[in-house]
Structures are given as structure tokens and as C-alpha cells.
Length: 444
Image (cartoon, rainbow, N blue to C red; front, side):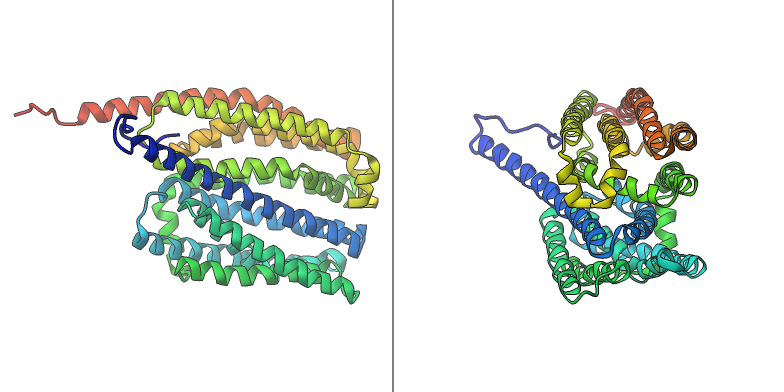
């Protein structure tokens, strides 16, 4: 990726040095994005391992249900806040940023407080181990989601280093506190979840101080109105995806039993490194592409193809490694959940490989403000994957659901590349129309 405008010639004094410095800065931002994603994913992985070791497999199943609902809320936040930030606000100056951050984080408050109330109500009705874990998650939900939003604010404005340091602080605080809980034998799903969210609260305070912003919940509707051409498609896409995947998992749990959700969660933790790299590529690439409005469509196509090829290759290698993991290692991590996760691990890893193959076209479409193209694909994918997962679980239990997801992800790959061609064609038409409308230099 290069900045718009002509690059200085190597004969120009300092031209090569400036270009080299620019490349180093770009590489530095990309590296900090990856470091932050690693920290974030490792935090989730260690949390899951601690729950299953300190509280047992049954508590892990309850935690998996609560974590699934947390993931659904964080997806809404990213559709309404994180992605519009990356697409529309990456070029703002310092004064504009403070105003934007106050409005964006205010929307997070507007999302999470009602969600927490609903989660408390659900936990009260369900009761038991799952109910108490849901209530504990609800108590800390606003802070967990706000912490994620602050991360994406840092990404948008090229401050991934601050995001990584903030996540490092989160990991240090929460795991130190969890170690104390385990030492005094007070660790269970509820106390571990509260510690997880309590550490996030401290990090939110630090992040908002660094950003010099105070959330403004009154700006919620103004933000949504301003970005209505984006958030409608982004939220619609996410809701379809959630209904298809997360809702499908919950249905699989209802059909097979709650242990199925725990098995899937354990496999997803192991597939986590692919999600780390995928998330780092998107969180870095989207604002970088969005702020570089004058690069050619040929360059955008190369970026999309190169990104997908690299991600697909890495994913296939990693899926092979997972398939060869010795059983003793798996038992060390997940104890009684390892054997259950084995049946879904390979198809879910291959499904992730198929998903990352479409990352490049999706990133380019988002950067050009063409969220509607990805939304249209999801209108096809959602009913398909839901049908395949539910049908697979009825016929072959939880393993059938995982293989159904793989089939769906494989079938979606060509649709993303068709969409990429359409997005670049539309962008070229808009560029030519803009040039045609510009007044001629020699016009009277």
C-alpha cells in the first residue's frame, strides 16, 4: 500500500530515506496490530483454560454459553462503532478525533447497558450454573465491550502500540487476580468472569484517559444517523451472521446437549491463532486502505489477492499442525473437553481456512464503503449455514454441525471474488464520473 500522490524519486535528496522511513512506520503499525491481537486472543485462551481447570468441565460449558452471548454483543459494537470508525474517520485531526471518540464510546454505553439488563433477566429465568454465570457476565459486560471499542479507536488512528500496551495491562491484572483466586480455592466460573471484567474496567479508565475523551451516550442516535448508509448493512450482515452461526451453535446445543457448545468453544480456542492473524490484518488493513483513497484499482486487487493467498496458505498449514497435535497435549489444556473437541477440530480449522481466503475481497469492499456487497453475500450464506449446521447435528451430532459449517465456508469463496470484481468496477465508474464532472482547466 502506498500513500496517494507521486512518490519522491530516488534522485531527490532524502527521497529514498523518506520512503524507507514510511515503510518502517507502516511495518511498525502492522507489528503492533499483530502483537495486540495475539495478546487479546491469548487472554481469551488462557481464560478458557483457567475456567476448565479451576472450575471443571460443567462450569466451562456454562462459561461457553455466556462467552457466546458476550461475543454476540461485541459483534454489534464492531458493526456500529469499530468498522464505521475505520472506514470514515481514519484521516481526522486531533481535535476531530476527541469529538469522534466521545460519540463512538457513548454509543457503546447505549448498546451495552440494555444488553446487560437483558442478560440479567435471562440469567434470572434460567438459574443454576448457567444463570449465575450469565448474571456475572452482565455485570461486567459494558466494560468488556468498551475495552474492545477503545482498542479499535487506537487502531483507527494509527496507535496500535497503545492498544497492545492496554491489553498487556489487562492480561497482567486479570491473571494476577485469578492466580490469587485459584490459590485461595475461590475460583469458579462466576468469580473468574467478574475478575476478567474487573480488569477490563481498569483498562477502560486508562484508555479513555489516553484518548482524552469522555463517553457521550446522548450522541448515540446522531452517530447512527450519520453512518446510516453503513451501519444498516454492517449490522444487518452481523445479525444474519450471528443468527446463522451463534444461533446455530445454540440450536446445536439444544439438540445435542450443552456439552456441544463447550466442545465447539474448545475447538475455537485452538483455532484462535488464525483468528488472531485475521483480526490483525483487518484491523490494520481497513483504516490504511480507507485513508488511501487514490490508489489504483489494480493495486487494490493485488492487495486483496495477496492478502487472501497468504492467509489461506497459513490457515492450511496451521490446520495440518492441529490435526497432528498429540492427544496428551490436548488433555493438558482441556482435560475432559479435549476428546469431545477432537471431532469438530479439523472441520472448524478448515472452515477458518476457507473464511480467511475471502478476507482480502471483504477488506477492499469495506474500505471502499461497499458494505452492501458483503451484506448481500450474507443473505445467501445465513440460511445455508444454518440449514447445514442444524441438519448436520440432527444426522451426525455436533461433528455434523462442524462439517456443515465447512461446506458453507467453501461455497462462499467464489461469491466474494465476484463481489470484488463488482466493487472495483463500481469504484472505477465513480472515479471516471468524478473526473468528468471536474471543470476543465481551460473552461471559460
